[in-house]
Picture 1 (cartoon, rainbow, N blue to C red):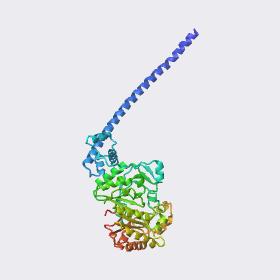
Picture 2: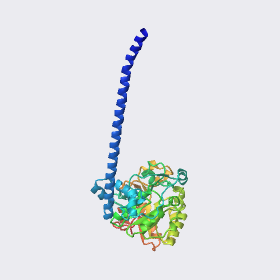
Picture 3: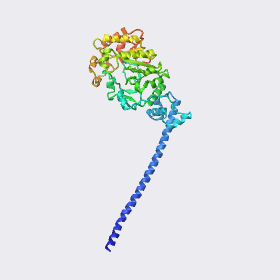
Picture 4: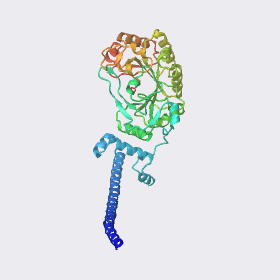
Length: 425
């Protein structure tokens, strides 16, 4: 009897547990149903969103095709989207990423630009990157921007900069990149080249004034050309038009890839030079000036446009002898333009430079409009006069780089339409 009572008692105890178990199962089913409903709604919303984006993308690309000369900034404002988004769409369209565009292309009704000639992408593994002295990463901002930072009182023709890379392996002691790129620990080459080349095409179409695109302001244009084959893809784009110019500025002697290509009036090569003594002292990792001169001479013989830039001129002891020897070598090449520049820098560079800092002792604060330190003005006049007196008359265009209005006036140089390495003509 006692056992029976215990059994009944225990049975009554289990009933609430069973009821609790049933409620838990019901709640789980309800939660699962709710999650499935939310998931289906989310998927539906995503599909709707993607469809809306696809429709907007098609409208924008159609509009660009109908209005090729309209700047992308205006297109972005008209459609209420970011300019960066439009550039990304155009780049993906160029690469054939969108299946819909591929179908339209096969049907002969593509909203994309015609597929360009094969463009080499900068695809190198990390071991090769270390070997060649740079790292690869994507660039998230525009590849092209306008250089117009020089204040009134400093003569410098404005130009456009192509930032295909940041940094240079030569690390010259006086180089302004030590300050400009102080937050970049090592040279970087940007790998998202499809967007870069598309941005260049957009710039060519949208920029009405004939302009120069300088590929050597934030890096050396040719130093890695064997590895990344930049010129193979870049030069044909400019050779296909005659409105804008590409400037390849270099301190290297690396012209093997460039020499394989057909010269174009729209492509300018420019070599940065110095006297042998100055190069030995402050440009230790750079190729010797004689090698750069030989490369310049070779390109000129092949039919390329060649300019030379002697910058920065540094008045080391017996500077006249060293630079006179350099001038004689330059006269034998007779480039289309010579640009002269003396040592100049922002004071903060002295604290960022890691090489031979004694180079900064040559300059003083002249209270110039851009706050750069330069050689004393009398010394600069003496240097420029020496070059003018020794350069051959066959070189018709000689200009100064980022020099003051006062110096231009003393030397009777045209400061309203100045000659310069980065100028259009």
